[in-house]
Length: 405
Image 1 (spheres, rainbow, N blue to C red):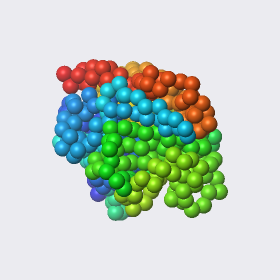
Image 2: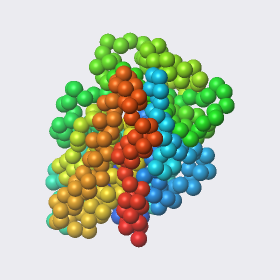
Image 3: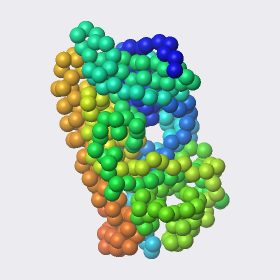
């Protein structure tokens, strides 16, 4: 393997999804040298519910990305609906949200990071990670960390004052860092998605729907291009011994639930195949591991039913940015900045994760969901759950204003 160069930067970010690209844009805008690394070439698709919650929009506004959502005709979503076997809850969201594919959003945010001045290394795979004090040569008396990236037989070490992990739900470095969640065998799920088009003219594009089935659930969200995204989650135990892949599994749950049969009968596939995930483990994760700052799904996962994953990813970048900038300006105060980020992460995300897990437990049990739909008033309950499973629009606005002022 050939090593052709050795790079040095203030910050190296592994993963260019919504979290990584947002952080790269925020830091580069401040003049902090930033290298953003991703193994994929963009645009590229990702497993996701593709519902962009309203509490992400203040940050998108501040980054100047909202106009691109409008020009790409990303639908506005104003209502939620939880669909049971016999009845449904329908409710207005506290604020309008957007439907946008990861293919589009991730590309927009990556380009925004480039425009801000971040160096982007797409198509490069991070193959080695050496945390602080185990990596590159010390600079100014401070030890540096190193990530080694590789492409087509070429390896490039990158020394950084701060390494940021934005590699998603599960990565090889989680095992290397000894993170406890990777050993969990009891909370594993798998996700799957596919885009569809309606067989007939769609009358409703402003709804996000949730459907229940045994040990899992589906989210149905409109995206740009008159398509909808059907994204599902299922416990790993239900797939034990299952044969036939995701098409067969969809046939199976449609045969069990009449509402799902009607849903799939109304649409035709718009993408060639299903996109599936590595195991998703719903357990707490630390936002800093061995002096590596973790953001997005690498720092914690909210149940998909909340429709808050993309928003949380971007918000984690927003609260990590001051900590990372603080470490760059005063490396000797690293621990203080890491503790500040950890506390901000807990305060912003822990309550909504707890509410989402409780709601997901009910949603993946159709009989229990039907009972809840029968006894609880739909509109106030729906709005209450929507507000508890996401952040405050005003809080995110204040955080964005503070960074950009």
